[in-house]
Length: 193
Image 1 (cartoon, rainbow, N blue to C red):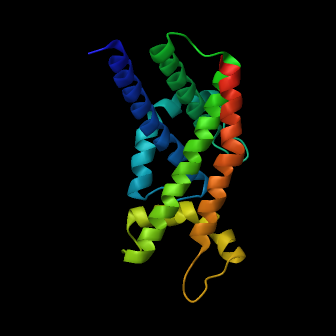
Image 2: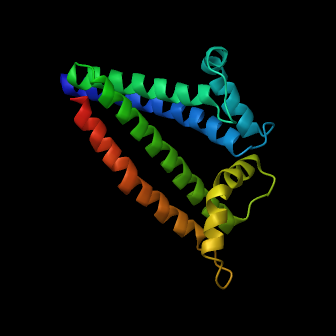
């Protein structure tokens, strides 16, 4: 077994563990932002999972204007740690601070966009199978996607009973990735070396 395989395995574990936890932290931020029901079992799970590192941060950083700044700071800290560890594993060195910061922002934005993409796709599938409207997951998915789908429905109203708003939202999210996140990622990579 070569050293490259070990580094790849370690990198995979780092990316997976940090990625899963970052999804939970981002979901907490988004669920607070869309004012999802705090007593929903999914919300409760996300809160229980993310509370340990957020408690000390809340003592240091207050929320401001309805934005959960401790949550945003935690996301950034976790992404910086993840990218630093990956840099050490793959190249044996740390990335330059400016590049590390820009790459962290770009990757967090990318993760947020893909959370919305998956939520919209789940929303589409749920509309086909028509599950119980009070299912905790269904309620959360509706709450997350509604701020994106509502304006798209005004732009493209349903035609013949078919709702094309998810397609509009998915196209818009992909354009965000192509036009904003990829150039930001390229800038971060250039600054990181």
